[in-house]
Every structure is written in C-alpha cells, then in structure tokens.
Length: 329
Ligand code: UT7
Image 1 (cartoon, helix red, strand yellow):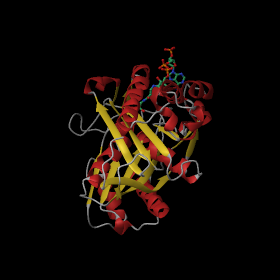
Image 2 (tube, helix red, strand yellow; image 1 turned 135 degrees about the vertical axis):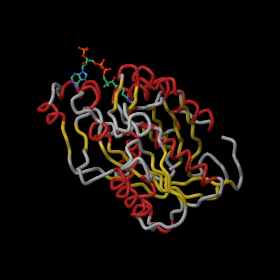
Image 3 (cartoon, protein in one colour; image 1 turned 90 degrees about the vertical axis):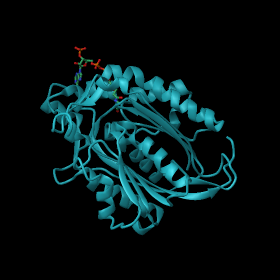
C-alpha cells in the first residue's frame, strides 16, 4: 500500500461487548408460531438469539459494551473525546444514544453522535471515526454498534422475527503516529457504498416524519440475499486493491452476521479459508450494527484475534448500504 510517513492511524486499544441475559431458542419460537428449528437452522444457521428485557434499552446495552471496551484497553472514560454509536434502534428519536452513553460514562468533553446505516452501521462508524482520528481533530474514540431489533419486529411475521436479536459491541480506537506501512497497526482502509434505489427490499414501515410511529421491519429476504454476496465481495476486493493485499494475507474475516449461507458464500467467492471466518450468527442471530463488534469481542477475548493480525470486516444492509474495513489489529 502507498506509505505515508509520520501520518496518523486509528489503532484498536480494546474491544468489549454486552448481550442481554434472556436467550430465546428456536424451540421457544416453534412453540409460539408456525416455524421450526429445522427451517431456521437450515435457512440461516441461527439456533438462538438474545432478547433485551423491558428495562434494557439500546443505550444501556451500548454503555455496558463501552465499559467493557474501556476495561479491556485499560483506559478511563476521561480519555475519550469522541463517541459514535451505530444504531437503527435508538431509545428515543432524539437525543442520540451516543450522548446517553456519554452521560452514563460521565464524559463531559468531546463529541458524541449516532450514525444510521442499518446493518452496515458499524463499518460506517469505524470509517467515520477513522477520519476524525487521522485528521488530528480527536484523540480517542469509542465506536459502538448497539441494537434492540426485537423492538422493531412484528412478532406475528415469521419471515422476519426469527432472524434478529439484541446486543452491543464497542471498539476503542486511538490516533497513533505511523510510518504508514502495511504492517503498522490500525485501520488500513475503509470502503463505503450506498444505493437508495433498494429501499423497498428492506425497510421499517414507520418513523417520526412519515407516520409518527416506530413501525415494523419489513424485508424481501430473497431479494436481499440475491444482492448481498456480490456487494460485500466487491467492497472486500476494493479493500484488497487499496492495500495491495489478498485473501491469503488475512488472518481473520469478520463479516456481518445475518445468515450463515451468506457468510459462507461470501468467503468462498473471495477465496477466504473457512477456518479464518468468525461466526456468531448461530448464537446471536442478526444483531444489525452490533453483529461485527460482538464477533470481534468474542474472537479477541478467546485469543483468536491477536495484536498484528490482519482483520477484514464487512457488512451489507438496509438502504442498501454496504462496506468493508481492513484493520491491522
Ligand atoms: O442484515 C441485513 C441483511 N439481511 C439479510 O441478509 C437477510 C437476507 N435474506 C435471508 O437471509 C433469507 O432470504 C431468509 C433467511 C430471510 C429466507 O430464506 P430463503 O431461503 O430466501 O426463504 P424464502 O424467503 O424464499 O422462503 C421459503 C419458504 C416460504 O414458503 P413457500 O412460499 O416456499 O411456501 C416461506 O413462507 O419458507 C417459508 N418461511 C418459513 N417457514 C418456516 C419463511 N419464514 C419461515 C419461518 N419458518 N420462520
């Protein structure tokens, strides 16, 4: 990749996550609606999902994940001057979840805001934080993906409600001097795309301006599936091209966790060996913007992702939006 001497890079200092205690299995759903464990596992790979209690909201999940990331990094909240929360399920229309996290952590300086790119939200948030940090305007960022998608479900609609779950994950990034080499730690590149013409394939049928209601998620699953693999493969290939890397150089592939079939088909198309793929969809379901940081936190905590590893993240979701980021851990 083109090296930029004495430039800044956004380096991962820590990662953390939080999952609600309540677990809903496929068998639980089978007892409530016309579905089966066999159908859900075969079509999606999902076996269970975590669902927030009434007392829990996106900001409470996000705060727990942020605290875990701070602890992992050995940093205190006072070190943070930027919080970006990727979410499509804020506690309230406003204020932003990020400002609620900021208050919960007793942070009184810097900026905090939400970013909405649905399932691609965490990749968009990493790219955004990276631009703040590498411009020199901010020093340390909490980048959080947090969702309570269970609140957007029509629990009578078996084609959507079996797919999603709740949770949050957070990454702490710090601007550090770099020689701009491929082996130097930090975010190496990010590739973001959107195409609003696909709105009808995946959307929520309510909102403050259109209906004055929260609404329910609606999805033409087969149509989304048809586009997903090609779109994520494109942005991953673009990340390889931007950095002069290839699938063989990757240590870990951490895709958005929507469907095991999409994950496997994407890895296969990209020539990424299956043992390099981090999978959590079986236990978490699709947690939208939270799925990648939840998977990063798991693979970091169990020792799979280590300092210096090359990690590719990617996602695709409502909008459509899609994107990738390549990180030297
Ligand atoms: O994270 C954002 C991006 N979202 C995604 O990536 C999701 C992408 N799409 C998918 O993952 C898949 O399309 C689904 C998992 C949503 C569905 O799988 P599919 O293989 O595309 O199934 P389908 O929608 O074509 O439905 C097949 C059949 C239908 O019955 P008929 O019309 O063939 O008789 C559905 O009614 O499966 C039926 N079905 C179910 N059966 C049992 C749909 N949902 C269920 C269910 N239980 N929960």
